[in-house]
Image 1 (cartoon, helix red, strand yellow):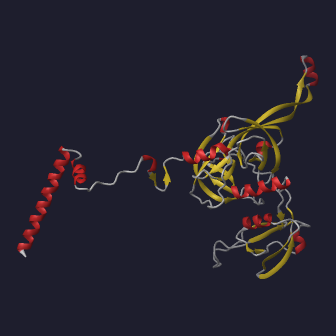
Image 2 (tube, rainbow, N blue to C red):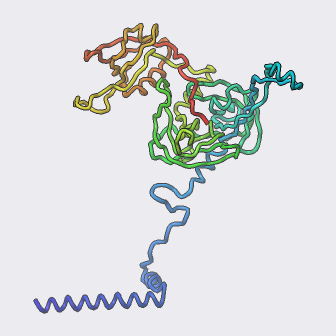
Image 3 (tube, rainbow, N blue to C red):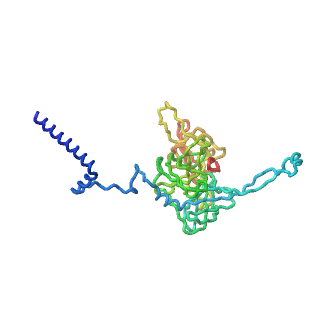
Length: 392
């Protein structure tokens, strides 16, 4: 036993002496360790070049994504003729005191800054932007990435989604790639490209803060919430992923006046594509409508039911509308429309909007705990709102 202990003590002293000598050699002759490893074929693997270094799962630079998407983003200058009423004062002070001013109407020109995204090539030349950028414009000018200027004509607009489609006549138009395969998730890095404050081709970075946001309880549309900086002039510009693919159309922000910081919204590319196709095909967007308002299904805390109950509760019925004619009543719980389960009120609004007016669909649910099945003939959805109200 004593012999073994003595052997271990000798080995430990030898190891400590060897480490001390290696430290001294390394201190006096830097790089000697690497030369010895190279001599015996034990060289350490080379460090990756700076361009390939990653922080977490994201690249150090997003320059490739910007280079892919930026040429497809254009600046939009919409000139509007604004009519206002004013008082024209008399030159004579006595007449001014006696009669005050004379009402008069005058017009002046205002220019709105915005952005747009090229979504089809030459021969078609379609550009997506926000409706509030070009609404009531007398003429619209588009500044391309390469410095060319093109006059744009309005193909059609949709106030509810705040989207508009323009057409320009130009050659060699760079078309943006649509991200329609990988679903967007909260936490994904996104880049906003546009024309903020007239600064041209400005890029800001952020993440997807949330998806499926509704800014109007009666709207059938949803929004992407992001903290990528969106400013005056960014409206209609591109929100892209790290591959430079279009994931949304920037549309509005909630600014510091409302006590907010870093809260912007974009229209998802899926919604924008559907609006684009309908406007190109018919000049306008048509949505189905059941004729009812909905809210989340109330669940009592002590009911033993899941906190996030599926379905939607009917809160109001529009007189003479499809729901009223079919026999749907307030407080009904709607669980299924056609062959699809209803997740929540927003899901029901999107599903009914996707159906064609005049089509018939079976709606299933619960009334006072008893199941019911009713057939509803959808009508065309009336204009429920004039687009987002907190635009930039």
